[in-house]
Length: 281
Image (cartoon, rainbow, N blue to C red; front, side):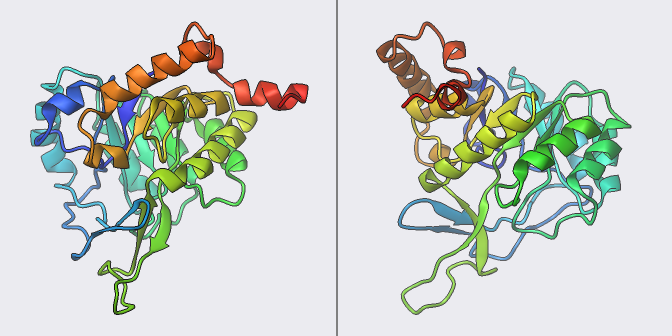
């Protein structure tokens, strides 16, 4: 099991040591043109979790390739590049320019307009121009995420990232939205049951590797994602408040495995499915 960061949840310049404590580093989403992102306020805490409306702020593909990517290679850990766009061609052109990385296709950002093409069409366009591993990051808002998983697998995806944030809104004391754009992507602990359900459904639908994410704060959380069918796990919102989270989660995972009498994390893979299939508790 690899331990990664969720895209956009870790600034490698401010915390390179934290990036190096992961098994792979996932970049912020890169788009063809530079984006300043949405107007502030762009982040708001809630009673449990947080909302963000960053709007894919990034330096654009040209500067990323010329400046950011060479700096990232200096981290000394495997790199996953999150790729975004507003049409299949946007995604494909960026993928064609990337080498020596895993690519995560951001197909589900709730803070920007989505491409008109389907997730499968975008994956197919990218598959046609690159041999790099392609992971499709899907939205938990999909009414049948399993069918989307099957479609992107058929289109050439090598893996799935589950899940992105859900659209949410929070009000201030004067009953006005706290975010300038009103709504934003909701993340944090309450997202975990939704992530578990998505991973479970996609594991039933597909045999692809899955990076599970959403509400992971502890080793137990990571283990539950694996039990539902995740191959790897990513940390998100917890990284904003706990720089020790990767090492702590690893330690807690080992403790939880020992408590359950399991030799390693592979023994817990799809355990939730086995329980349902045998009618156990």
